[in-house]
Image 1 (cartoon, rainbow, N blue to C red):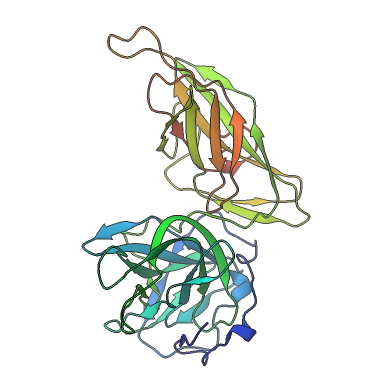
Image 2 (cartoon, rainbow, N blue to C red; image 1 turned 120 degrees about the horizontal axis):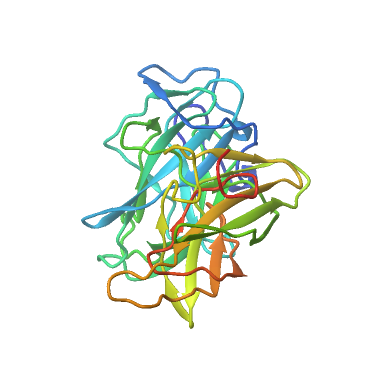
Length: 334
């Protein structure tokens, strides 16, 4: 960890003690629950690394910094607790550290946070804009390595679009800093997208249509030998005539998606299939007499970096909608 000091339950880990685990185990509940906080010392029933799934949330910019939530989801069957700061560093594609190890936010004091089974907590990670001096060089990170508080094991989370200072001009420069874990609150919509499935087969399923809407489910089949977990929206980019187009992430639409606003956690047994519905419309809007038809899409599973190109034939009279991953092959939560 290059000298990073973890708070509370552990001493100072060294790189030789690191084990490169991925996400946690898969005994995951259907929905994420809020956590609670007490101002006590760390307790014995601390969360095991194997019972935690760590995810990297969406950015929130501010002057000079970009903020990201690090979500710790308790996928175990019993309540547990965390206390202190996670250990964080950014890595390139070959797992080499970029810049310096993330500093701890000195203005915030840790408290013990209890996670019920299915509960999650958040640690806010701030990344300094590398374009601001005294940084003299930057690099785009491919992974963020996260040690939960008190753990000598780390999750390696694929990320995109995060630039970090790689050449600070002063020894005191902080390219990033992290707050201690804290209870979720009303501003947290849930854990960030994650995916513990290391082997996924992806394809387009059976399309459906109704009242001007056309839908195609993206199928995710667990080709591995162990049960794994998926949560959130896949990343989708649509293409027509070589031109890329973005999409809207919505919980549900006319043809399917979730049964409400809560995003489900999906456990995939070996050979089982999950799906995410992609919806387009074929009714021209306004003075238009025709609409483009998308011919391909780039798909990345939630919280992952494995991207595939799939052939499609969705009409694009309006912005394409993408719904979260749900169980089954229809793209609709039963």
